[in-house]
Structure formats: structure tokens, C-alpha cells
Length: 571
Image (tube, rainbow, N blue to C red; front, side, top):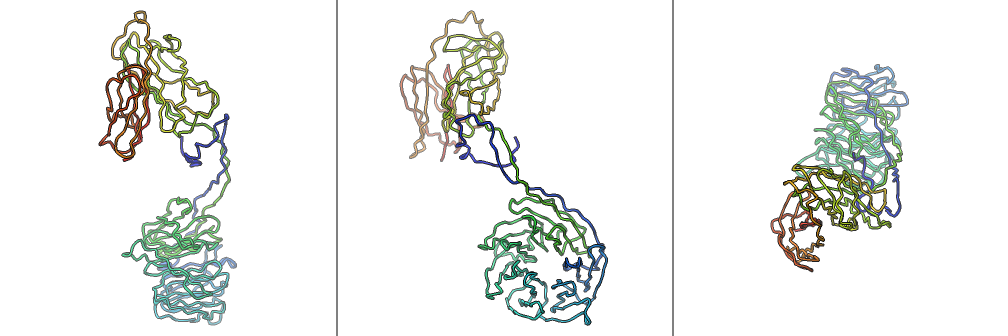
């Protein structure tokens, strides 16, 4: 069996209705299908230096790229040819289309500029900050622009590029992102914190730490809101993507996406996935609700410094440190409703234990029935139960006490009372009395089949084992009549106030008993008792010192039978 999902726990399994012969169980669940991203185009050495930002304008099917070489290029997405450019002679750190492809806002050193490819002046200074302007963000719905600087200044501009807010945060700002409705602005800083502002009230809504401890500053290079503004993804220099719930600002997921330094994160609009890119040269995508990778990290020629989504994430543009631009078709995603029909059964393990038999003597065959899920099987109404044993006739005979007959043959049917198998925390043992004629060797024995009170929906998991015959036996004709078999039983009583464990014996006549304790691997742990037990009810005690907590099997062995029960030690 290969586990494909956990549909029910043990407690629920106990209450599946066993009164009737149920043939199948039907499960309805959701499955998810992902394909691999496919590289469509690569522009080698698009810039002479690191790609610092990318952006896309869908109405004109244009994308822009900026670089630390001081150049802005406009590209056609259909042909991947340059359609315009400008060289400002200074490092450019971020650029965004603002409203259309005819207005591009970019940050260079401590200044914010407007580049209008079709304008008369083309280049216009909008504002300056006290220190380097690292990042820009645009809210598409409300048509506002924000910029953040290393000096902690945050400027917000309206659709006419008039400044409407000026905030002094006192933080060294590395990343900005607007919520989808444009009402919240999140900023990531050098100290590993993300601060969320409500632009309507101009108040701080939350301050979130992405640091793993107080000694580490997880510089937040990238942040992104989900489409419905329910989640916020943050990527820092520790290589992990942290996803926060915006209903209570609690950390929901920590995704070990990269070895170090994440430079971009985002939520594709069509799947519950987080995309991230890193200076370790890979981009990764994780189905965060189940924390599994949609695909293996995809390696690029150089460190990835920029990420932008096209068509809601169905296509990706990656900017590399060596100046390359790479275009990918992203994974296809499909959510499928599945119906699964499974045969309904209750699993019960039947373990035939290896033992040593003396030829020519009556021996018990310990066959242990283990109710794996402890489902109360006694709720079945019919009362017939039997086991069909597989016993090689040249070595074994089965003695039937109810008829006082010895039967030889490959197979023999033994009718048994299996009531105790329905009890919780117990093992039931069938003692099958055998003779071993003619030979001196090891022989296998086992269960051919079992019927439990006529029910079909029990799956018997059967193991065979061996009997070692240690002396030659007498011919069957020399055997005298069989004596009546003494009946003996025992119970385990654990004293909750001390370490004492009490064994209560009940026998219909005086008999010699061994009481042996095994672990679940079948290894002998302790000889609890060995000696004669008088007729009637008797109590012995043992403290089982030095035996660790766990689940054990205690087996009572007499000349005629073996009986086993489960013991759970909790110390």
C-alpha cells in the first residue's frame, strides 16, 4: 500500500458502521495539477551591468528594463526588439510605468524622475530625497505612486504626479508594495521589519518582524500583497519567504525557498503559489498551503536581481546580474475534483509466531490476532467464525478437543471463539493443538483463510512462520488417549499509585505456567513468572523496574495453550 492521502483518523475509523456488509467507501477530494515553466526567450547582455528593475505595460505590449549602467530600455514583447532608450549617466535603481507606456517614473541616486518617451522634454525631475531612493511602487487601481529612500522618507504622488503625502519613517527603506485596493502601503527596511501604513488615516496598521532572532537583520528586499489582500509575502537575505495573514498579522508560512538573499516575490493570480527569485541564481515557486514545490528551483546563468509578472503571473520576466533578460511561460495550474472509490474493510493482522515443538507431544500453536485500529468487531450479529490452517500433513496433525479427533491433512478448519478480538488493548490467541510425527526438521505453518462471523469486510493480513521440531516422535498408533485440557486465563492490573503491576490468574486446576513479556518486535524483554498456579483465582505482583515506557505483549504459556494480552507501561 502506498499512502496517497489521509482521509480519516483512527477515532473516525472506529465509527464507520460495521453492521452491514459495506463494499466500498467513496471519497471526494481536490487534486492539483502543475506543469513545468518553459523558457521562451533570452536576451543576452541586454544591459552592460546588473538589471535593477523590470516593468510591463499590457495595453501597448511593452516592457522596460533598467540597469546600474544608467540606461532605460523599452522593448516590444512580440519581437523583443528595443523601441526606445535613454541614458541618464547615473545608476538607476527602480522604474515603473505610470498610467501608460508614455510615462515612466524612475529613481536614480537620491532623485525621482519622469521619463516621457514622446514628450518634448522627455526627462523631468519630480523630487529629491536626502539619501538614495531604492524602490518605487504603483497602485494601479487608485493610480498613485510611492517612493522610499535610505533616509527613511516616503513620498506618495497622485495621478498628476503631485505629492500628496510625505512620511518620515526613520527607517532605511529597501522595498515598497501597495495593497490591491491601494489603501495600504507596506515598506520593508534594513532592520528586517515590514511596516504597513493606512494611507487614509495616515497611521501605522502593523509592524512585522521577519528576523529569526534579535541578533540578525533580515534586510527585506521584496514584499507583495496577494490579489485579495489577505496575505503578505516578504523575502529577505536569509533566503526564506515568509507569508503573513493580514487579518491578524500572524505568520502563516515560512518557505525555505533559497540558500540566501531573495530579490523578488509575488503571488500569481491564478494559483495559490508564491514565486521568488534570489541571488543564488534560482527562481522557485511553492504551493504554500501544502508547502510543496511546484517544480525544482530553476537555475539561471547569473544571480537573479529582478522579477515581474505578465498576465497575472502566467508569464515571467527575470532580470539577471550579468545584464541578461529571460522570458518564461509559467506553469499551467488545474484544480480537479476527484471521486475515489475504495474497498471498505477493517484490517486485522494475523501473526503466526515461530516456536519450538517437541515431537510426539501435544503443543499449542500461538496464532495472534491483532486488531490494528481497535475497531469493535463484536458489533457483528452472526456467530460463526473459523480459521483454515495450512499444516503439512507429513509433520502435523490437528487435535480437535470438541470431537477428541486427530486430523491429518494439508488444510484443516478450526472453529474458534474470537470474541476478545473486539476488545480494546487486547490480543486474542487461538491455541491449536498439534502432533508432529515422522521427521526431525523445521516446518512452516500458517493461516490459509479466515472467516469472522460470516463478514466479508474484514481484511486479514496473514503472516506465516515456522515450527522447529527438536526430536523424533512416536508413531501415531502408539499414542494413548488425550487428557482433558486445563483451562487458564489471566488479567493485567496496573497500580496507578505505584510502579506495581499485578497479574491475576484464574485456573480450573493446578498447572505449571510461564509468563513472558515481549516487545512489539517479538523480542523477549522479561520473564515475569514461572511456576505452578493453584486452582482458582490468584494474584502476583511485579514492579518491572528498568523497563521503559511503551507497549508490550505478555504471553501466558502452559503445556497446553498460549494466551497473550497487551500491556501499556506509562512511567
